[in-house]
Every structure is written in C-alpha cells, then in structure tokens.
Image 1 (spheres, helix red, strand yellow):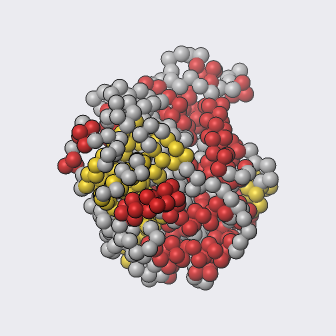
Image 2 (cartoon, helix red, strand yellow):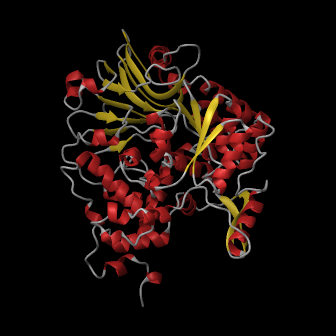
Image 3 (cartoon, helix red, strand yellow):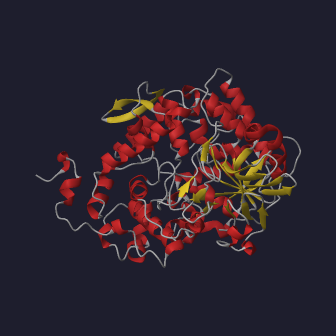
Length: 576
C-alpha cells in the first residue's frame, strides 16, 4: 500500500524484527510503543501527523482535525491528553487511527475513530503485540496461521466478516469505538445513542456546512466521485473548488446521465469510466484493500485510479447510513405481492431479518454455495445465528431496536473498502465521519433520520440541489418511488429503473473470469458472479501474504459426501 501504519508494543529492536525502518517516512519510538508511518502527504493540514517530545510520542494516520489553530494534530493530542486524559479523544475529528505513548502519564495505546472507519489489525501470535493498517502485513508476522472457519463462512455468505473476525484466527481487528493497549482491548464511550429533541433539519444543515468548510483546506486539485443520487451532490454544491467529477458507468446509463447533469449544474468537468475488465479485475489494485474481510466489489473506481487527475478526493459514502437511516427497519405494505416500504418505521422489527436484507443476503445463492463446497453447515441457520450474536453485541450502545440496528450496520459497514482504496491514493475526505455529524446521528431519533430530513437540510444549503432528481427517485415520497419502480418492472411497455452500478454478471462472463481466476475450482463456476468474486477475493488476499505457506482455502473444494446436500438443506428444500 502507498500509505501504512505499522507498530509494536515494544522497542525499536522488536520493531525491526518484522519491518525495516527504511520502509517508512517516519518511525517514532516511545517507552512502550514503536510505530512506523508511511504517507507521502504526512504533515499536510487535515491529514496524517506525527510528533515526539519530552512527554512521549504520538502519530495520527488519516484525515484528522483538532480544535484551535494547531496545524499538527499529533502534537495537540499529546499535549491535551496530559491534561484531559481520554476526554481529549472526544475532540479528535475525522477518519483516523491514532497511536499515543505518553511517558509522563505512563499510558500507551492505539485508538480508532468512533465508527472504526479505519481498520486496525493486531496479533499477539509472536511474543510481542503487533498492530497495523495493512492486514496482509500484520498477518505475515504470524508464525503458524490458521484459518477462521466462521469468519470465512460469513464472508462467503454475507460479503463481510462480522465483529472483530478476520480470515485468520490469530489476526483480529479493533472493535468500533475502542483502543488497543499492550494487554487489552478497551471499549470507549464516544459512540452511544442518546436521542433528544432539537431542530433536526436546521442542525444538520449547519453541521454539514461546518464539516464541508473544515474539508475545504485539503490540498491541491480537487475531485469528487459523483453519483446521480443524493449524497455526493451536496459536496459538489458546497465546494466550488472541485474541478472534476468522476462516475463509473456506460455513457448512456441513467446513472451517468444524471451525474453529468449535476456536474453541468455546478460547472464541473465530468468523466464517465466505461465498465470493462478493469471494473471487476481481481488483482492487487482491488483485493489488497478488501483486507480479506469485505468485498472488493465495492471499490468501483479501483481500475481507473490512474486516470483520475486529483490530489484530494471527496465522496458521499455512508451519508445514507448516518443521515438517512439506511439500516433502520421500515414498515411495509403489500402491493401486488411485493412488500413496499411506507416511509414509517417498523414498530417491532426482526433484527436478523432486517440485517440480512440490508447486507444483501441471498438464501438461494447460499444454499448453492453450500452444495458446491465442503462447508457442511445449514447456511441460513449459520448466518442467522452469526447476525443475531453481532446484533446482541452492539445493543449496549443503543436505546432501542432501531438504533441497535443502525449501530450494528455501522460497526459492520460492507462498503468501507471503497474509502480504504481511495484514501491510499489521494488525500480523501470522509464527510460522514465528521464528529459533529456523528453527534447529530446519535442524538437524532431514528424516526427523523430520513431522506426527507436530509433533503430539507440540503435545500437550506442550496435551494436548487434537487433540480435534477435521481433517476430511480422521481417523487418526494418513498412509497411512490417504490410503487413506480414495481410497476415499471412488471408492465411490459414501461422501461425499468436501471441499477446504479454496472451488471457484474455480464462483465464476469464477458471477460471469462471463471477461466482466468477460478480454473482450478470448477465446482464454483455455477455460483452467482458476486459469490464467485468473494471466492477470488479471499484466495487472492491470502496468497498476497502467505503464498509460500498456503495453497488454497480447504473448504472451497467440492464436497465428496453424496449425502452432504441433504444434510445441509432444510426439509422443505430437500429432493423428495
């Protein structure tokens, strides 16, 4: 990776057992921690920083803002921690990891931002605790890695590993809102739901405006990944400095036409990257950023990075989650046999059913996956139990089922590799992780975290922001959009709304990825393209760090027991 943080709870000698100091732009050594930082933009205001002094050392990796006019966030944190302790962490703002070794206080730790938008992987498999941002580099230090069967099953069936799991038993990652010490993992209290009454629309507008103003100072030529939806357009509308916008899709696709209209409205150049082999190509340009825990499919722009002419990139990732209630459960009504959301919250949601739907779980595809591999489990029972356990683990941060659903979704957000890849190549703003906006999310009742609230706030900032509506949302009301979409799919003379992303199945077949990437696993060729891409992701990530020690994931081979299929399938699906 171009940017990396790697460290040990130990001295420089312990650090150099695993990595060379020459690999990093800065290496800081405290009494308890030694950490290396590689980042070509180290020291840029709003970005990675490091500092050493008489009190100890500190580095912050990623996007970070602090109160006042101190241009070095690491220096600010080291000084503030001596007087304010953990309260200083409340005032850090952005998408970051921070490492602090305060010799005066005698405290040393690694801490995530409140929503874990930057992963920290760690292992204690050797005789020293190792941590870092590149899962492959941390995994490489493990003497005898063993595969985590449950984590791999979750990835193949859900597209992500839940909680703190990775593909390797000895490798773990920090939970949401936590810190890593030499001997423990401590939960923090920065991300906890406390709904209250206030001006939800006006406050959201004010906080969006301040959050975008903070990010205006990021350096150089600016670009934005632009969709035809709601989230990225507010960035484009408020930052006239953005010189170029980029969308992945065919020139005549509805999504691209909509994005082009937005770019024209805000007088910004626009480029559409036509989907070809680069969109799905499972090489290191994508797979390394999946970290072996989430699908690389979400990194839509990866194959086109060299064609993006920008130093700073903006995106609207997770705005739907924090401001528009993506993970809340909606009440539905039956419309000609289809459940259509009404726009109101479900008063008694089923957490497992809701999260499986939000994560995109396909029961039929999972049964087929189970039939074609050696995982002798009932997939539906397995994923239901796994999701239920993860939901239960997050409930303590919420005050009800709907907020617990949001917390669980945020803690296991499938699309974060999108940001991981982007921020490895550009100085990248992550608007949704602004501390004021997270606070708005935590204080706003779920009934008010809606598309309507978000759009009213956006219109306070720009009354013309909805001049061009998203192609699949022509109406103000969610219910009307759902009904029109349903009838467009069912009535022969009407054209359907197009999905926002290219058709992966068509591209998978067109570029013969079965032959190029799965030639030795003919048993999985009949799976849906998305599940085959997950197989490729896992194998490619493992081989990137353990090629000499691991030939293949053992469970991907076909099941030889002729009775295995009937064992896995529920009675209702067994052959008579």
